[in-house]
Length: 168
Image (cartoon, rainbow, N blue to C red; front, side, top):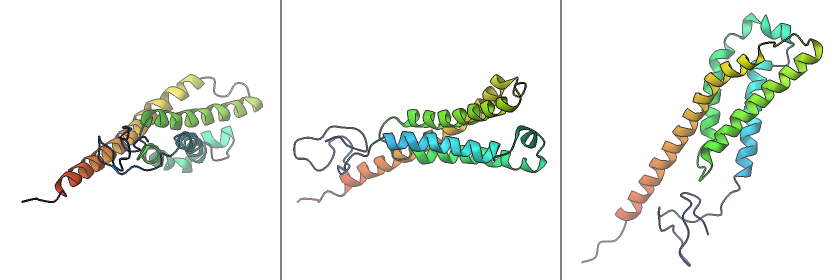
């Protein structure tokens, strides 16, 4: 069996990992995290930037300026949430969050092009600007999740060594 915490191999019949001391658990499929990340990235984009509005409504909406301040918090929280307790592929899962976000952006651009092909004539720069904001936030969220997992496993390892009975 493989440890869900550190990925180490089990010694025959052991109940605890020989590397980190964690109790063996059934390993959860990482594919669900990939799918949740893609769906989360799409949902964040659609709720913050698209909101079911046409291109003209989105570009002239003065009441949406507060959403720009919500976006960084959502991307940071999503990067943290989908990668917390991920034993492996942590930054690949974060990349899937970004892929869902950018796929939704491209889908909205394609919809806008159906009505007027001259809209989004500088669309590569839209991706560049969104990427300059979104990528560091998602990576910071994944890094924070990594740090939380590291310190929890370090505390768990320290606790297993200190709890041994003292023999005289």
